[in-house]
Length: 215
Image (cartoon, rainbow, N blue to C red):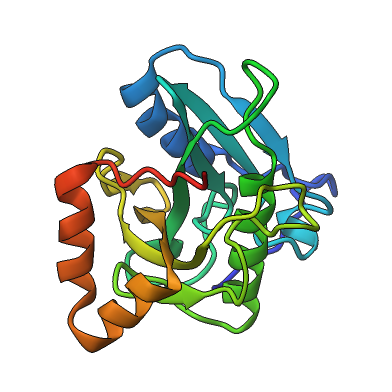
């Protein structure tokens, strides 16, 4: 991904970057959740200093949380180079996670960590993620035990287009929202032997939003 450094203005002062890319992601989320104030986590040291993500927001919906990242698309600068019409990498990550928190109103913390880890890994590899990618994590998708997330037989992440956050056109280019779907190693092997889409369609027949339930 191309990234332009902040330029000084003629007076020698640093010009702060535009936030129009961030604002466009916010607007897409408001289209679903109105004025709900999400639980937001910022990542250190931040996008300008090596983090793949600047932050991640989680919106409460019924009995689950909808996580949305900020930073894989061009959220700040007006010009990061020629990305063929895409904003940054051209996507942000999302994850719908059934609430497993013992604290009412608190978004589970481990999805914030896993989203950042995978975003960092994909950015450094580099690997362009898309709805056909499957990521075996070699352990629980919750990062158990080091993230504080629960143990779970779900060990593989499949990517799909988010069912409600549609692709948007921003001042910095197009952004697609790619949702994590957690599956077992058995499901992953079935995907390899048959067809990923076939397995996911079977899951959609039970849950159209493909919410991750780690219990």
